[in-house]
Length: 168
Figure 1 (spheres, rainbow, N blue to C red):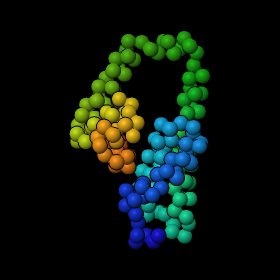
Figure 2: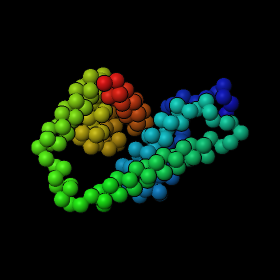
Figure 3: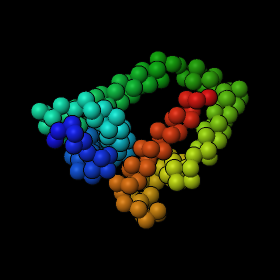
């Protein structure tokens, strides 16, 4: 594959999704986490596609991106675990005060406002996936759209929402 023949995101996703997802599923043993890291990996691959060197196997390049994303996930997980372990139970209970509860509620309301500002297609995808906790397959069936189309829409919706939240 030459740089002139860069694949579309749909083709990249369709032809390599199972390969990357199954690799991550073996690492995580969790379908949800594997899906999330796979989506993130394809997002990065598409953003950095011009950096791909055709003298190397394309799937190897994708797997290296997935490995890095999985490594980042583990680092974040360890940091969160250490933070929780280092706090005493009294501190955790103390932090759950009415003031913090109000701040959390306002943040949640702000997030909902930003979600509602998205185009209906992306708003629905975000709500189905993250608020109703539907699987990609369930969303696909609910919207009567192919699974890969849903994956792409989730990626785009997350990116748009992230941009809206950063612009505050």
